[in-house]
Amino acid sequence: MTSPMRNIAVIGAGQMGTGIAQTCAAQGMTVMLTDVDLPRAEAGKAAIGKALAKLMGRGKIEADEAEKLLARITPVADYAPFAEADLIIEAATEREEIKNAIFEKAGQVLATGAIMASNTSSIPITRMANHSPDPARFIGLHFFNPVPVMGLIEVIPGLATAKETTDAVTAFARGLGKEVVLSQDEPGFVVNRILLPMINEAVFVLGQSTAGIEDIDKGCRLGLNHPMGPLQLADFVGLDTCLDIINVLYTTTRDSKYRPAPLLVKYVEAGWLGRKTGRGFYDYSGEVPVPTR
Ligand code: 3HC
Image (cartoon, rainbow, N blue to C red; front, side, top):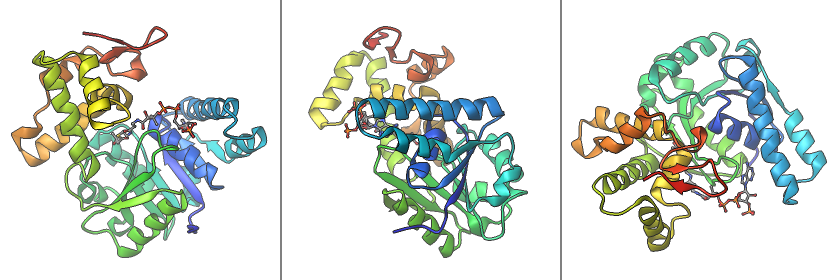
C-alpha cells in the first residue's frame, strides 16, 4: 500500500530518529531531519551514512541506491521548512516537557491537513495532544529499534485523534513495509507494557544475586529463544530510556509492580547508560562486551 504522505519531518537525530529517517528514505520519501542544532542533525545523517556503508560492505545495498537514499535526507537547523511536511514525527528524548515544547514550536508551522506524531515509548498521547495545534491530527507512532530491521509499528490514537488520522498513519506505517498493532492510549501501550517489567525484573534478579549478568541473558536467549537477553537489550535500548519508561508506568498507574529496580537507578546515576556510553550492564570498550558485575 502506498501512502500519499511523502514529505516527512523527523525531530530527533538519535538512535530512533535516524532509524526512522533511513526507513522513510528507503521507501523513496523525502526526509527533513532536525535536532537541537544543525551539527547534531548532520551527525545523525552521517550515522545513517555509516549504517549504509556497513550494509554495502555486506552486499545488502548497491552504492548508487545508498547514495540516492542518503540524498533524500536533509538535515535542517529549525522547524520553518516543516511547513512543507505531510507528517512530522517527534523522536526526541523521552521527557514529557521536552516533547511538549517541541509540539508547541513545530505546531506553529504544521500545515493544514498535515499530521503530527510522537514516537514516545510510553507517555500518554491524549495528554501530549493538548500541546499540539489540533489534537484530532495528533497520534502515537511507536517504532522499534533498530527501526530499519524491526517489523512492527504501534499506532496509538489519543482520545481526540480523528479516525482519518489513524487511517492515514496506518497506511503510512504499512507503506514502510511494517506490520501495525493498534493500541489504546494506556501506559506503555502494548509492547513496552510487557517488555519493561521483564527488563526491570531481570535487574531485580541481578540485584538479588540470583544469577549473574551473562547467565540471566543466556537464560532468556536459550530458554525463551529471545535474540538478546534482557540486560543486553536494556543496554541496547539505553538504561536511561528504560528507567524513564518504567517510571512512566509506575507513576501513571501507581501500581507498585512497576517500581524501578534500585540497581537500574544506580546504573543510570553512574552514567552507565548502555551501548551509547560504552558501558551499561556490559562494558563495550573491548573487542567483545564484558559484564560489569
Ligand atoms: N539498516 C538496514 N538493515 C540493517 C541495519 C540498518 N541500519 N542494521 C542491521 N541491519 C540488518 C542486517 O543487515 C542483518 O540483515 P540479514 O539478517 O538479512 O543479514 C540484520 O539486520 C541483523 O543484523 P546483524 O547481523 O548485524 O545483527 P544480529 O543478527 O545480531 O541482530 C538485532 C541484531 C536485529 C538487533 C537482534 O539482536 C534483535 O532483534 N534484537 C532484539 C531487538 C529488539 O528487541 N528491539 C526492540 C527494542 S524495544 C524498542 O525499541 C521500543 C522502545 O520504545 C524501547
